[in-house]
Image 1 (cartoon, rainbow, N blue to C red):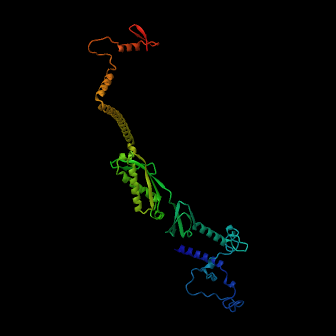
Image 2 (cartoon, rainbow, N blue to C red; image 1 turned 90 degrees about the vertical axis):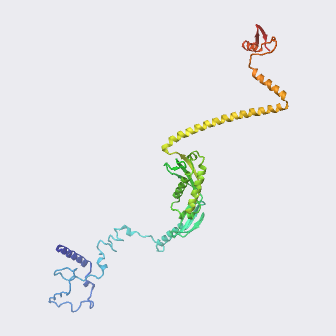
Image 3 (cartoon, helix red, strand yellow; image 1 turned 180 degrees about the horizontal axis):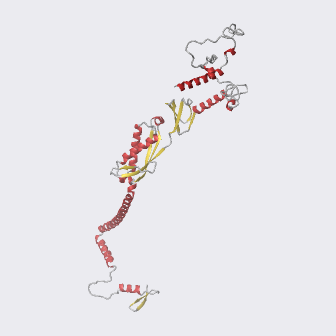
Length: 407
């Protein structure tokens, strides 16, 4: 504590000495409290020793130097005078120091040029900037496919359509535009990851589908949903899972039930979005891919190949059956025609049918059966076969060793 007290006294002395150097002497200001010039009665006569200064009574000022040092001059009563920088010091000021406007500070020498009449350009520059800001944030030109939502300090005000419109400048009013006529499309899933869904027969199918939608009410679209794109994807996925759970795997894989699935998904998605007051209308849903899970994809391919082979065999059998049925129907039609003729002339028709049948049966038979006495006859079959075997280039036929000209 003793060393600390000595150090504090030294620091206090240094501060007072600095203040005395910075503050002018009271006597230099001229005059005493009673008037200017030489004061009467204050200066002792020549040859006399001035009496010692009276010791002030009361507590001693702790900020004054101790010991027998003479009484310091009166300090300034203003705190600004104490901390005011000296003219020749390094603090700057209006002189030529390194402060503002000094030769060592180039930024202090920058000045805005004046107009011909001596006035500053600054007001005109400010007015030009303000006018450009008002023009750029107050006038709006929208294309035919866009609409804008006008908000006043963040609160909904109105909807502006295509063409030129005017609002209050920003930040009083703000316009947010959106395309309300184009069709937006979102693919689910948007990556190569699997999207497995459960069918009614407890099988899994990997689906990839596309949903198309557009904006119906821009006000609801802007203020009711935080992220409309994500909301549409999530609602469509929930509707797709509910619709796939109502059908079998074969209906999804073969495409027979896809039309019904997409129709149900669009209706369910629209109902949920209407309940959210989203301002979105669903234009349609399309299934792009329906595959089995990757782990059982090979087995599904084998089953699919077997099903295709079975379908090919069934198609071949059906074609053969149709051919046989057509032939039978043709025979039946021919018999109906013969029967119609038989009813007109039964005896004649019976004989004609008998002759045609016998001709058809015996046309390839070489033996001839006769009844009664046997008479000589020409063996026409043998002659025919010999003629075919012994036919020469001239067309002659050899019969029983004799040559005859063929006719």
